[in-house]
Image (cartoon, rainbow, N blue to C red; front, side):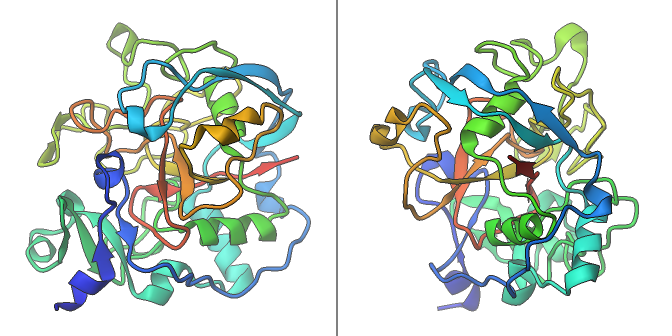
Length: 324
């Protein structure tokens, strides 16, 4: 068996095949423990206080019924703080310089990159994911080399950091004195006070013809017309914030949440500060990414959800921090 057939797998259901491919194996490649500390100066001013309260979470009109988006249910949250923006390359670089942290992708030696974003030379040389050939496993792709050897972060300091696993996101949160948001907190924040709307701004994806998030336009997965101005990630403040003052809540990159992923409705009985299932194999991802397209993966809706294993990473996965 070829090496890439051992190291590269795809998620087993339609729900995840286009979204974020999964690293093979159940082992964790977590880097060194990071000591918790007070929030660093670079993070000050990047957190928005949210009042909490009761909101309607989920949807009954699901495009993907097996995702567990419903039923709609009232959920009550305590007040909390949410990151105004996803963690950027600039912020993650400060963390790495301060701690010497190595991400799971760096430890493993590869991560997943969208094939269309590779050079023609690399496109033909990289193993692709079975069932999702638009994903390639690229040697040495990581947060500071998003397309592998020869790529860099030049011009992308204000873009969301990618190729970060759930483990990596948690390490950053510990270092900055924060935590990952729960799925309920994330959805409450993304909704921006609106009741049962599809997107952070309403039900119309492009009101008055305006693009309000970074997703795929054109023929998926061969050609992204970049009608919204971007192919791949974009600066975290490229589009307007929602009414809570939060940027990039849908599109651009998927964002890790604290919860284990599950569709067993028993955990939905917890209606106050829910934290999801007690155990699981994968962690929740919310928000969709630049790779989402209406013809295949309409998961840039605020109720949409996906998941991946804690050690997995890809060029469309990032995170933002929360705190109590």
